[in-house]
Image 1 (cartoon, rainbow, N blue to C red):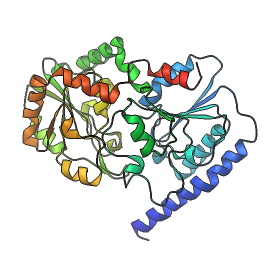
Image 2 (cartoon, rainbow, N blue to C red):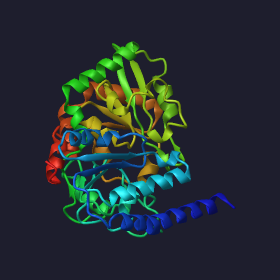
Image 3 (cartoon, rainbow, N blue to C red):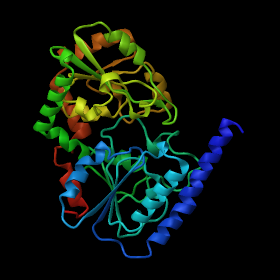
Image 4 (cartoon, helix red, strand yellow):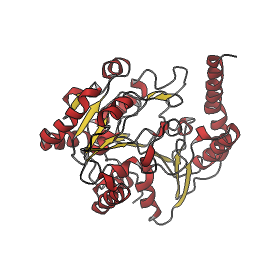
Length: 374
């Protein structure tokens, strides 16, 4: 049996599970009443609560009358039998829950028509408008998938008004589901205590970075989640090697955890590196928009910029961003210095306002008010 045949069989089995078995489990579990106050936080990509849900979980824990169940596992790391049991347990909870919070693609939620008394809140994990995704990206959703992979959302939170029409189309949502409430995850960036603690911890752990320009390299991946690859990492290493003006921090996408060594920074989450860095070098990663909240300069480095534009595409004109777009490794240092020395902060402020304008440190409370939880 060829690799291609095995993959097709695997995908067909997944669709059988998605469209037949999971709905059966849901129907069986939904014969009783909805459990008022049952709040489920679910994710299939992490073994712990993702950063995008932490602020919301902390807030809900402080509310009275709530029974919180966290269902977060990286199902790709589980055996088929264990993943099967996990899915069944989630569907049984889903059938009784009053609220379900997710923050990424989560097919079980879309597997069947949900009960009217259950609210699904998609705390989408990225802000702003950058690369095409969802139904706008031809490789994102399998052609043979029946139904909408983003079905059953009652609220999908985005970072700014500009995102509302794009996400409504990209995820095929009814008008009104996508709302510019701001992203719950970004509330922490407005905490002075948090930012000071992150900086202090970073420089205590890496005292050799003091007095240097801290360059955070945080790219996204190419290819699929199963077979990711990087573009440009070697250029980054070469550009900053031996240059005492800079302290390079490489923070790769989580898909590379088992494929690359992230050296001394593997135990520091990206969100805790942002306050310590002076400049961001990225390609098409949405970390750019979390970074934008700090109004610090950035550089886009993408040797495959033209190819990526043709094959994936963008919602925004990258060339209009307040940055330098570098395509070659020998342009990197010059681009970094140019942005640090010459970028007008007013341009960075306008960029933040357009892409992240609804993020003001109070998004979590706004979302909870929208769903009548407070």
